[in-house]
Length: 293
Image (cartoon, rainbow, N blue to C red; front, side, top):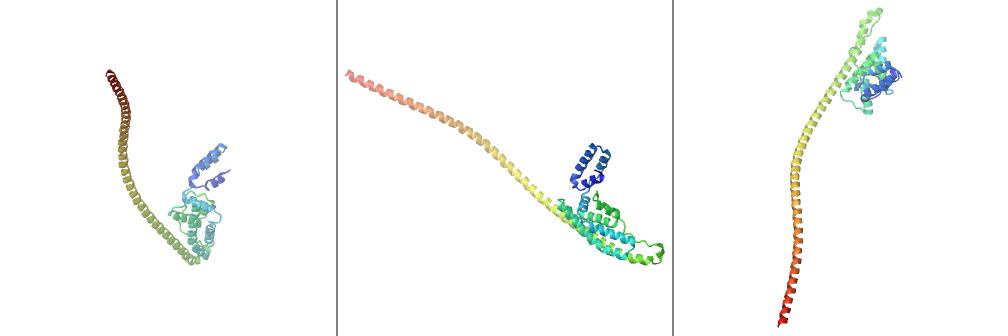
């Protein structure tokens, strides 16, 4: 394994898995005896979410090909001083970037990682840089970005050979018009995108405020329910204690009742026995009296 293979493997992962996988791979490589490669692997940076999304799009066969092909044609037109080709590429540039931004977003969502609305602008800037700048195009093609790209310069104006200086002014003016129109379209598209993002942010903030109000209402209801539950629990606890004491008293009364019943039964038996003895004594007395007579 070399650094290219390691980077291809790591930058194909989701950002949340990158650091752990990178450190494990560096440790494994060092244990295998290649400390220099392990150090290089350890130095690889975790990609930002937008960079990851563009990397995944680059790995998806054919997804970025139209955009990269447009960039190649645009740069060739610059080098060839082909104003017509520049104008044609300029007309394609803005709508193609917009379509590709949507494709990058959809690809990320299909991979299970939806992007925030604000990510579209960074994706657009990265793709625009790939169209204008050859180095940026190569970085995008390799699929190992760690951060979004941007291109801060203007579209280069064609450079005429010295022998054609007599017509240079007219030629530059003719070529500048489609370039200027393309630049204005790009600025208008970016302004529209910024407004869309601002509107999405305002809607998200409004939704967050409403959610916060709802959360506060639910929290107040929860607090009221907790207080009511506390009061009821305290009352139940009091009644439970009273019931326990009443049960104890009932049990004691039951014991006394049982004892009284037993004592009453014993007294009844004693009374019957006494009555029987009295009857026997009375009969004996009557018998004795009759004998005397």
